[in-house]
Amino acid sequence: MSVATQAIDGKAFAERLRQRIADHVPSVEHRLGRKPGLAVVLVGDHPASDVYVRNKAKQTVEVGMASFKHALPADTSEADLLSLIETLNHDNAVDGILVQLPLPKHINEAAVLAAINPTKDVDGFHVINAGKLATGQSGFVPCTPLGCLMLLKDVIDDLSGLEAVVIGRSNIVGKPMAQLLLAENCTVTMAHSRTKNLSAVVKRADIVVAAVGRAEMVEGAWIKPGATVIDVGINRVDAPEQGVHKTRLVGDVDFASCQGIAGAITPVPGGVGPMTIACLLANTLTAACRHAGLPDPIV
Ligand code: NDP
Image 1 (cartoon, protein in one colour):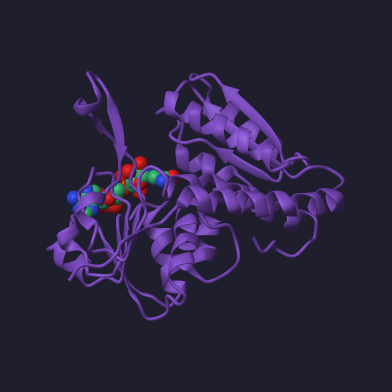
Image 2 (cartoon, protein in one colour; image 1 turned 30 degrees about the vertical axis):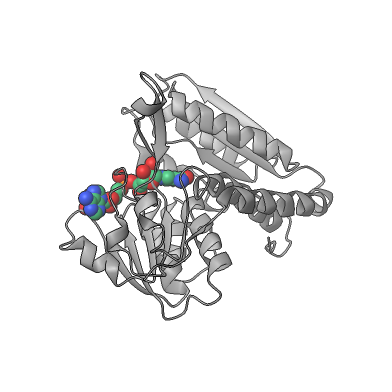
C-alpha cells in the first residue's frame, strides 16, 4: 500500500509561532515596564554553539525581547560560572537563562543546571522542571520535545490512544518527549540502544520520534503505513556528490525510504530544528508572563 506522504514544514510552523510570540510581547512589556529578557551564557569557543547562540540572540530581538549574551573564556572556573548564574537569577531584567551546552569538561554540567532559578529555566533542564513534567505540573518543558509535540498536534487532531515509540532516552529529548506523549494519552514505548528488535517495536507505532544521533538509521521498511514520523536527529555526513570535502545534514530517519509509507514526516533540515529556538522564545515569554503575574500565554 502506498500513501501520499506529507512533509511537515517545521520552518513555516516556527515562523508562525514566532509571529504569535511577537504579537504577544508588547502587552507583557507594558505590564513589566521593560522588554521580556533572555540571557544566554556561552563558555569557550565551540563553533556550532557559537552559531546557535547567535541565532538565538537574533531571533530573540526579532520578536521584540531583550537579549543578553555572556561569552566567557574556555578556562572559566565553575565557581565563576555559578556566580554569574546567581547574578542572573537576581537580575530583574532577565526572565530566562540559558546555558549553552556542552560546557568545557572541567565544569560540572549538572551543578550548573541545578543553579539556575527554576522559574527562569527556559530550557526546562532543571530537575524541578523535569519533576513537574513527570508529575503533570506546570513548569518549563525542554524546547525540542515541546516543538515536536506542537508539530504532532498540528498534523494529528487527537493523539489519545495512539501507539507512540520514542527512540532515544536522553534527558533533553527522549525522556521529556515520552512524558509529553503520555500526558496526551498516547501508549508510549521508549526505545534505546539496548532495545531488542527495534524495527518490530517501531513497526507498531502510529507516532515515531527518532532522537538517536545516528544518520538515517530508521528505515522506511520499519514504519507502519500512515504513521507520523518526527525526526529530531541532526547528523552531518559526507556529500561527495556536491563536491570534494562537502557535507550535508541528515536526520536519524532515512527520509527517502519513508516516502509512500509514512503519513507525514519532518525533513532534516527544516523540520524539528527551527522549532527548538521558537519554543525557547515561547518559554521565555511564558517566564516573563509569570514574572508579571499574567496568565501563561496561549501561543
Ligand atoms: P544522546 O546521545 O544524548 O542520546 C541518544 C539516545 O539514542 C540514547 O538514549 C541512546 O541509547 C539511543 N541510541 C543510540 N544508538 C541507538 C541505537 N542503535 N538504537 C536505538 N537507540 C540508540 O542524544 P540527544 O538526545 O541529545 O540527541 C539525539 C539527536 O537529536 C542528535 O542527532 C542530536 O543532534 C539531535 N538533536 C536535535 C535538536 C534539534 O533542535 N533538532 C536538539 C537536540 C538534539 P542509550 O541511552 O541506551 O545509550
